[in-house]
Length: 510
Image 1: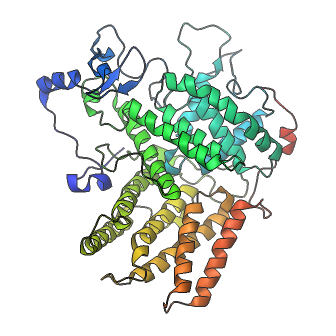
Image 2: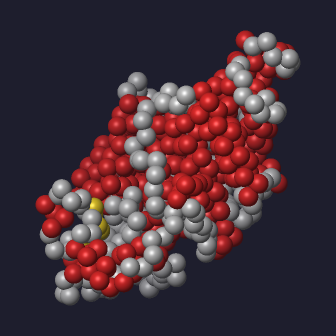
Image 3: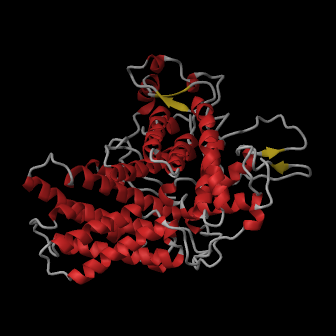
């Protein structure tokens, strides 16, 4: 695995510069004033200098307390741990699902596979192999009672995360499972709401991701208030990030032996997941960001083993089944791109810069975007069209649109012009959407924000004096409308949707 570090001026783009070791004397002072404290065997929590909890003894300073990974609700991040069933043992896979949910294990597993293929890798919303491994561990029923504590949650699995991932997976195949999707709409919200208190009473690294997924589930409801409710609940994920101190550098905890490097990598990964989701949701809603722009959190590490894991979809005719997932590299480079997009929003679309200074900032960001495109090792997504790679490149071109759209009819000393670059970016997104639609089906794309960005450029071309073809732009606008229709309407073309109606009609009462 490897990561990257940078100078302070480019901290957001390339990751932080780790502070130098300051010796044992400084470390003792650090532990006294450390904002990250663990009470008992729970997770590390953040308490700043104004909090009286910051003066409470830390569990790590108590010789009788456990150190290392969280002992109750956090399994040590060891990829070698598996569930090895003995005779009479079984995994109670529906233990935490709504009791009235009529679903078979086959449909359950297919829905989670759909979620794992089309949702989980984007922004690393869930580490799916670790989630599935820990789901078995946390739901194991042993014939012979064990003296070991029974885990309910880990850094990668929780009952809330399980229910929300299932709900989103069912959504991807809602045309084949309409009754199940409707049933889940009525059950999941209340069922998950009952889990919120329990999981936030003792949060761990799975909690902010579970809260973010719960907000996404709330957005799926066919109610006028769905968007508002989802956004407000999404804010809970960021409160959890701050409570856990995931937004703070925890290098000193590694050096003092309180957590492992794997724990640190998990914390950093969680931060960058929520950073990217915050960025995209804030842009969609037109609201302020919840996380600050600057951070000394190391960029997510690139794990070659994770990249080589096969990308798999239950859709039988997906041609990229079995190809390397590249999910770790895409996460790393999307985090870098997200830092640039954050700068674009903060600078190019801000009113706090005069014209000349803004122009200089914009041209500097153009250079940084060009460098990102040159340096990232996956330049041809159509040759390896796993969904998250296609979406990452769409986001790159959308970032260009956001940066240069204010200059579409204004002067900026660049060649090609801002208008031409916006048009080129729009055409590139269109080609990527066509590839996604042909292979995966647009209904499985995280693409609404991309299509809306395209529409704005098509409209600007139509109302401008540009020499670009008006007919081509009008056709491109119709194309965008067609994309939105396809996303919003039931699928009538065959994209390989899993037809398992018979399995659904054989109900399993959880």
